[in-house]
Amino acid sequence: MNTLRPFALRRPTELPAAGWWLLLLALLPLGLFASWVAAFALLGLIIVQRARPLDFLTAYLLVVVVGSFINYGNGQVTYQMWILTGFIVFMLYCYVLSRRWDSLVVPRTPATKPLLLFFALTVVNFVRGLAVGNTPRYAALELLACLALVSCLLVASRRFSERELMAAMIVMWVMALAHFALGAYIFALSHRRIIGVYFAPVPGVVAMMMLNFALREPKRSRMLMWLIGMGPLLGQQFLSFTRGFWFALIGGTVFSIIVYVGRGEGLKLRIQRSASALAMLGGLAALGILTLGVTLGIGHVWELAGNRFASSAGTTYTWASSSNMVRLLEYAHVIEFVQEQPIFGKGLGFFIVVPESIGGNLKEQWFVHQNYLLVLLKQGLVGLALWVWLLIGFVRVGVQGRNLPSRIERSWCTGAAALVVYCMVYGLVHFPLAETNTTFTFALATGAAMRLTATDTIALRWKGRRSLSEAA
Image (tube, rainbow, N blue to C red):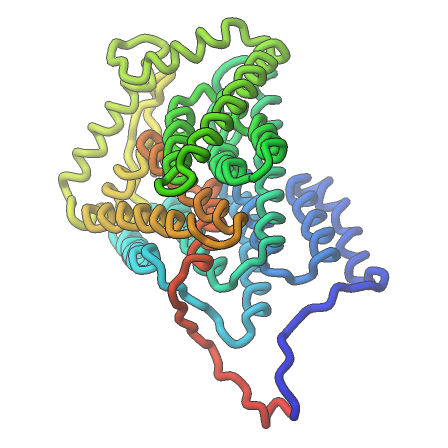
């Protein structure tokens, strides 16, 4: 009797066909006359596709990497979004090929319902924002960030093997290393605090994942390797001199330790291992910071860090606390608009006009330096309630995986929960999940955790399966 064989793509073993050579030849004029970024992106796509043709996870990781380097502040965000959109379309094509019959498999988890509800509300507010005359460009940026978040359902449509999870972890680490190199290079040139894509939260969220892998390593030598790998990522977060990063790392670390220690048999051993990991991490951090201080010429590095911490709650206008005053003025301005439409918000694409922190020139600003207040402004109290429910749901998803039989799966799930906590804390002073830089990494981590902990799945088929007689 004939049976249906699972769909699989064989890797090419022959030399590249003429089409591949034509693509390679197109790189030179693309780099000379258009953009070297686009040329390198196309080259990376060609290399990856020769190694793993039309593989969904590989295509999604490409989207994660490209999305993490989108620069919202250089005036070329539209151009960069077109490049990212090309990678997203290719990823969706690979996804359809990988599913064939089931276009989407939705897992039942604590985050599924609030995710779908928040997505539906975002689409409604996107249409409503355009209808009332809000800026389409800003509305599209916000909608894309929500679509990036919802893409976790694509990741959750399949269960990844331990080997694939580790491969994804390595890719994210290399991506975070690239962010460290970019930030260190920019800091070495300017010797002052710079924000934006040069110091994105991506290394911080990856570090939270790695910490949970380190805590669950049975051998101290392998634990040390994970912690050493975290070193450059933590160094990037420190060099940003962004207190939001620092407090987010503290919150994520405390959460990771609490979840790992837990209670019951072996409590004392887990406490000792946690203390050992924190001691090693502290020593590595101190050594790394001193090294950065010497190599990058940062004098009085500990004094600078102490002043940044001390100014966190400062209200007296000084250089160190000036950002606090600017944020308070921004929040007060936003709250005035919130009071006009508190239930459903102003809709996507709405912007405010605020003075710049330096110079005082007025500028349009579609974002708010507070993720919760941003949701409240655009989607009202209804959206804020769904947003908080969604974040708590993601934390619950990760915590549910702490007892999985596989050490790698346990580490991934609890790391995903710590990543969410990091974003929840950082969201108090910034908008990490309103941009693509962090959101695709967030979606990859939480999507895999959703599938690993799902109690059931619902398959949404785009066409019926062929019967065995039809396949014969």
